[in-house]
Image 1 (cartoon, rainbow, N blue to C red):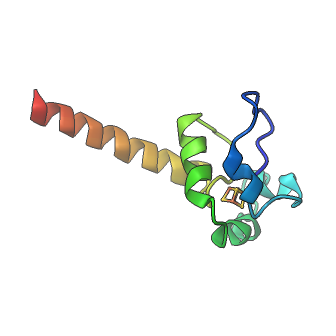
Image 2: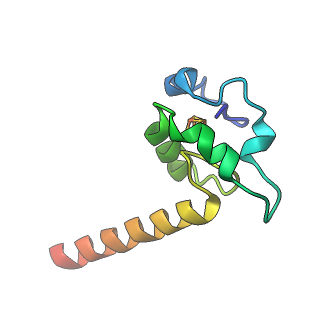
Length: 92
Ligand code: SF4
């Protein structure tokens, strides 16, 4: 997706985004609205992983990124935090 708040000169992976030229509103559906169409665009996107990691790294709280919703990204952040905590416990 084209990042609306990208001020660092752009991310090269964005040039290969499936959503280039697609209405950005599709990726920011109203609460409770379907995310199916946006996720469908993401499904065949070759930079899906880059997009998801960008959203995770930047704490994007809204919209569909990397084919995942806010809730799905929250789950990944939580899982990674737990994995990090477990790793630290093992090495401590
Ligand atoms: S994964 Fe989806 S939102 Fe991200 S760049 Fe690709 S099409 Fe756009």
